[in-house]
Image 1 (tube, rainbow, N blue to C red):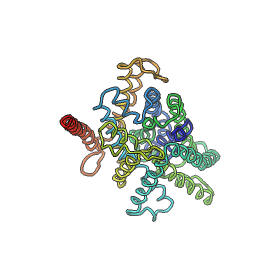
Image 2: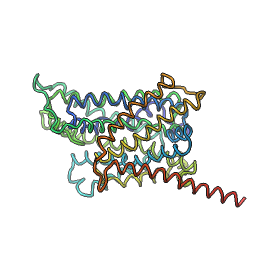
Image 3: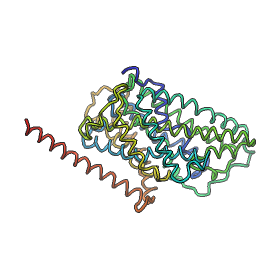
Image 4: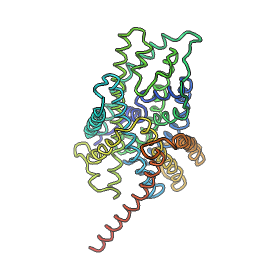
Length: 445
């Protein structure tokens, strides 16, 4: 199976798509905070949100390079209950998170051909994308990683052209961009948190990574640099043209290209390229996340938390085929929700799961100080505690900002709390079933 394992560059590219996927998805930050606010948000958020998470993942993934990643960390550090809650939060959050990428795919396709995505057609297109990525993942982790490298190269071209043109056609001194009509700094931070989220997802495939003790820390740090640069440079370049930030919308890079290019034909050509790139980015991110999230049900099935059928593997590549199919079916459920509502629920649930991972980091430092750690978060026990404080503060801000965000008859926060409570109930219900099976087995013996 070694030839199917991920090496450094494919893992870095897959991590990049899991977290970033080029600047697609950050457009709402500009419309909510303006150019200066967006640049600051995109610069500060990775320092207080991404870097601590990447450091935590680097230590735990190199110390415990097992398939299941963060689920394995929480289970070993704090016991099966917290391991289950970690996996539950991640899987439930994935239902909302994974609907975001087909939504972006359809949004970009809609800029190119509105009639194709009108009505229910957009949901059908999203479902087809989910099915295609599920089939793609059956080919194995290495195939997904290598395809991420190829897609990264393909996506580079249109943004290089956009940045170069924007820098050559900067606004005259004193003709800066107008401020946003409706300032929402916390809303911009929320979108940035989503765009910088997902570092821990790469840990679930540690069993399929070549030399994980060395590969993970390098991939994490390299991906952070690539994500920050690919967000900041295009936004700063377009800001120099003086384009009104109110013209930015979800999936709107094509409209930005049309607005700043003085030659209509060239602007339309770049808009088409950026639209196609947005579709590729959404598909690539969804594909990489399918790789990581589908491993959770397989590992949980091995521990008895899910039916054994979820652990079945495709013989040729070792991929968990049943788990992939089950996850894909669940992800179709939220295709009709709006982008903002999906982000709200995703950040809340995934943010809580990340806090559990930081707790696992601290617990393992206390309970297993002699555990071999090829990479260690600097600062000893105090350092491991300190790096979890900034993500906690950001999550509190996100909850305050979205406590009243409507989602049908209830608020998004209320639905999030209900799903968290459901995870506790699911664990105890499952524990009773497992105990009953153990008792029946003993009675037969």
